[in-house]
Image 1 (cartoon, rainbow, N blue to C red):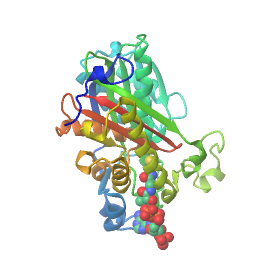
Image 2: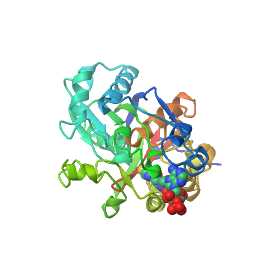
Image 3: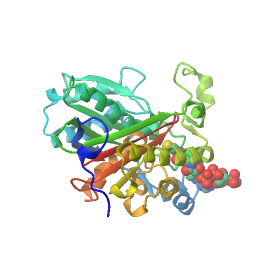
Length: 338
Ligand code: COA
């Protein structure tokens, strides 16, 4: 029989920050593997067996990340029963901001009417929403901020090289949002985040920043598209995510058996299966929706969390682990009592 665990038996701070509202949004347009077969030299069979992805959502040209973030954030606020002025902090995790500056968070703030919120973007690629929840949690724990809105949103399709079969099959657009606040029960039990900048070149978009500002030369060299060394990323992705899961379980003093649902970053089914194996987690506890959306980077964990709750995979009192990995490299986990 498993030892009983409760808030009081878990090590760490006795204050808890919980999720009090959720939202998500994906564009209507579906791009299937069959559609991609017509664009590059690939097959549905190759994509499905190597990644598990069957289709992804693609925003209409001209759609900004804030346009995807807005409905997700609005739904999360309504779900939390909060008025816009109740939000003290807005963090938008994204790798595809509307523009270099101002932050997408400020653009979103204006649309939502969050007149009392401090706003900033957080750049941690696919680990962005896990990093952002951990960051917001720290602000809320001080007591200075009461409600935080965390949004993970990406309009990746504008930065994907649709002539590169090795990357264009993987990514999709979308947004997820959560509202965080101190609560009596449940909430974030513990967390972990880390980075390894020595592997930064494995997944990047080199153009458009200060190193390679836009020029004819940068465009000719296709520097404004996402570049990835997929094979080299696979192993660190698996190792870092499995380690991160173990770290949060150890910090909480619990085992895999105490966790009802694992919500990994939705990059690739084979990566997720390898993480589960290495972390000792049975696949029936792992939530996956990457077959529908592909890799939506910073939005991925939040869209998956939303759908796991919608589908009844998470019940009150359950322990869930969100684990992420992304460009940077970045990685991190959250153990949440629901
Ligand atoms: N369709 C058909 N063939 C393809 C292809 C496609 N879409 N993409 C690549 N190939 C080919 C390659 O050209 C290569 O051919 P070659 O052997 O003749 O050179 C062959 O398939 C194998 O390529 P490789 O890159 O070794 O495949 P892989 O098994 O590593 O799978 C990924 C590729 C991208 C699916 C895999 O490496 C991966 O998932 N990596 C992690 C990527 C990731 O998730 N990044 C985001 C992290 S947040």
